[in-house]
Length: 318
Image (tube, rainbow, N blue to C red; front, side, top):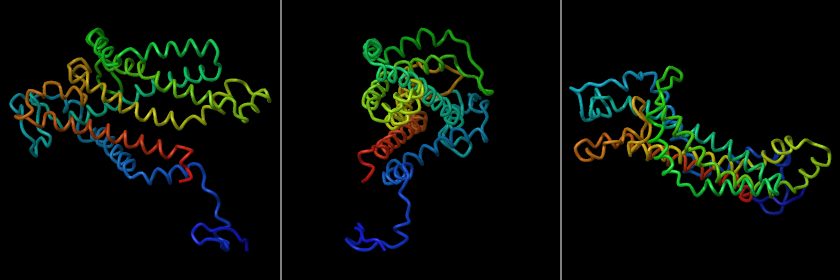
C-alpha cells in the first residue's frame, strides 16, 4: 500500500479505492466549479424556463392569437380569460409575450453569432500574423469602437426599418427591421471580442505546442483552428454569453423609443412602447414584458459570471 499525503487525513496511507480513482477531466473540473456558483445555477435554470416559456407556448397559442385585436376587451386587467391582461387595442399580452420572447431571443442569438464570427476571425488574424495586418485590423477595430452603438441603431432603424419588406421564416411573418437590428448590433459589437481573441493568440502562438506544430509543417489554417483557437474558447464563450444579453437590451431600448422592430412583429421591447402613458392605470402593460426582459438579462449575466469563474484556469484548482 502506498504512503502519501491524504489531504483529509494528513500523512498516511491511501486506500486502494483512492489510488485507483482516475483524475478529473477538464469538463468535470469545470462543472465542479460551475455548480458551486449558486447564482449561475439560478441563472441557467431561469434561462431554460424562459426559453421553454417562449417556445413551448407555441403549443397553446398561435401567432394569430397574439395579433388578434378586440377593441371591446381593451385594457382589461389580468383575469382568467387574459392572465396577463390586454393592451390598448385588446390583444392578449400573455400570447404576445410568448411570441415576442421568441423574437427578442432570436435577435440576441443571431446578433451574438455575427459578433463571434467577425470578432474571432479578425482577432485571430491580427494576433497570429501580426505586423502590418495587425496594425490595419486594430485601427479598423478602434474606429468601430468609437461609433456609439445606440446612435447608429437609431439612425439605421429610422432610415431602413420602414423600407424593408416583411420576411417569412418557419411560418412566421417578421418585420424587415429585425434584420437591420441584428446586423447593426452584431457589426458594432465584434471589436471588443476581437481584442480579447487577439490577446489570446498573441500569448499562445509562441507556446511550445504551436512551435512544434510549425516545425512539423502543419498548415497555418490547422494551427489557428485546431491548436490555438480551442485553447482560447473560455473568454470567447463568456463574451458570447454576455453578448446575447447586450443585444436583447439594445433591441428593447430602441423599440421602447419606437424605432425598433415594427409591427406586426412583437418583441418584449416594442411591447413597452406607449406603456409609459399607463404606468399607474394599466400597470400590466409594462410589468410583464419588463419583468421578462429583466429576468432574461440577469439570468444571462449570472450564467456568464459562472462560466467565467469555471473556465478560469488560474482558479480551477480551488
